[in-house]
Image (cartoon, rainbow, N blue to C red; front, side, top):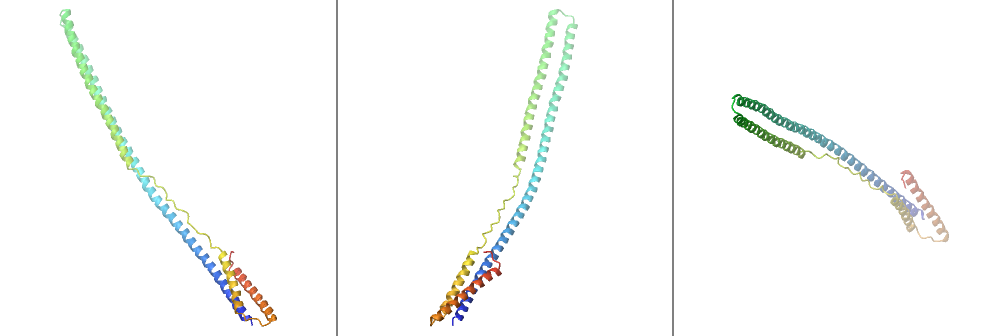
Length: 255
């Protein structure tokens, strides 16, 4: 009399067990899918970061090479201007030295001319002093002119240095910031689904099946029928538990 009720209860427990197992497997599949997607996104982001870094590094290296070359050209230009100024100053010095020598020769001629006239000592001394004054005045004029050239040279050299520094500063303002590879965070992978919920669901399914079977069973008329019904119910419960265990073993679940 109780067998149909026990069969229904056992089927209810088995169905609930399979549903719990299927739900757990679905959670595992979803977790695996999300993990794969997260890893693929991370790998893609890392590749994009590497490609972007290499492109920026190539542009940076080209910029560095161009600026270094421009610095070399600017310094070479400044050096040529400096050498030209030195040569010009040296030319003025050589010219002054030649003029000084000419003045010295002229002064010797003047002395010789004075004393060749055969005049008295006082007159000769006056004329010689006059020649000396002319020689000293001409030497001072040469020295003053050379001083002007030296001052112009100093100003030219200072301007060359300022222009060179301005060129270097301009080149430095065009220098790019060294690229840095983009940081790609580690892919976030959530925790694996817990089997505790599946085990709880299986237990609830078995308990629900037993409850269903007992509720459908007809009331026992005698004490003997009651004992037989209890034995059959216990047997049905044991079968439901064994079926649940087989299901867990079949799906190889990591509980």
